[in-house]
Image (tube, rainbow, N blue to C red; front, side, top):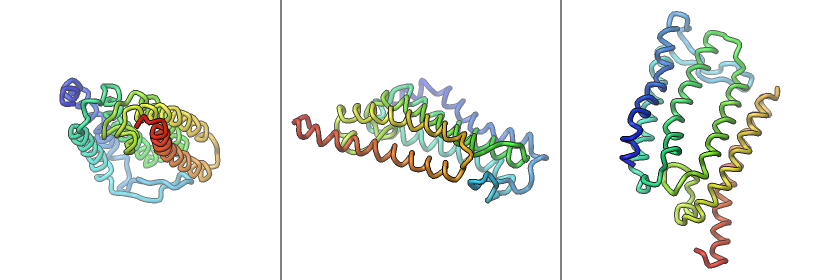
Length: 222
């Protein structure tokens, strides 16, 4: 794991710089931003919670950078960290930067009253994340940081591989459905359907691992 981090040191530094990009954009837009910046939006796309400009410009990117460092520390402490391949590690490395860019861009756009449909953009972002993660899940080897970390999968390599092949397909399908739903005008309905899709994808992946474990027991392969 440490070798992988050393090899990706430049990428890690770049990811932290990308996380902090909204800070630079916020400084550039400082005089145009209101003193209270919207940080949360209802299903109608209207702001329903605000924070001070300084917190939004400096605090939020720094919090995301701290989370990135925490994820790295957790990954380094993973007893099976050597099983984390370069591509899944790269995916993990870029989740926080993408979220930081998305949140920062949307926050500033709404603060400046730009005509942005946050439900559409948010749905597309969520759906694409599911598509990308789904494509990477089958490539994950057993570890405690990335993947479907249920006990039956963690205890058995065959179970882990089967579970992640199933979960990968399910998450790709879920992501595609979320992307399509993003274009529908019924924001509240779409929101709850998306929540149901996320819950089903997570629970179904764990259940698949459990039932596969039961099958392995019946066949004497556990």
